[in-house]
Length: 265
Image (cartoon, rainbow, N blue to C red; front, side):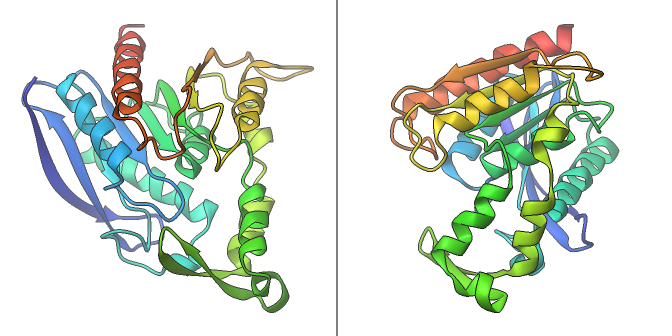
């Protein structure tokens, strides 16, 4: 199917203008998705671009966007946190609902996957969620950042280098990461979820995928019905899915097939 792309801009959860691209088919879309990127990444990450375009070629329209302070979006990254990421995702879904169609599927990579998982139950139109190489909690990132620069903990502000770029990190960001209870949120998810993770992911170990699967599928007491969750291993894949192009092709094909089933249920 022929694909085209449209550049868009909309107000994010903190009021700053966010930059996005909607990849869509020339024909009537079969469904609508919003793709959220990883920590300090942006909408132009190779895996995100190729998956989004691949889904458009399969008949789906996908918004990939930059969170506040990253990529082409306005705002100060150092003032953001997990809660503001969630607000940006909600704003992205509102934008799509107003200008394209109600969102059917949330897709997220790494920290964006955690963000998507945390909101799937909250957005009424959404039928399911896909998380690629996602963490099972948000507090681990705070610990990692402190190990990268101890001044964040001792002085309240520090700097870390990620992907060759320096980022200012404030203690308030870490406090937000540590205060959000992702496991408790996931125990309330009943909508379908699909998890992709590499057993040799050097950024986020496979234990995160196993814990996510358990949180989504195992219930006790007065917990709601479990989420019908699928966990798909990506043998040999790296965290950003750049080592082997076949990994992106596989992930795209599986998401497209699963998306079709979601829309037909």
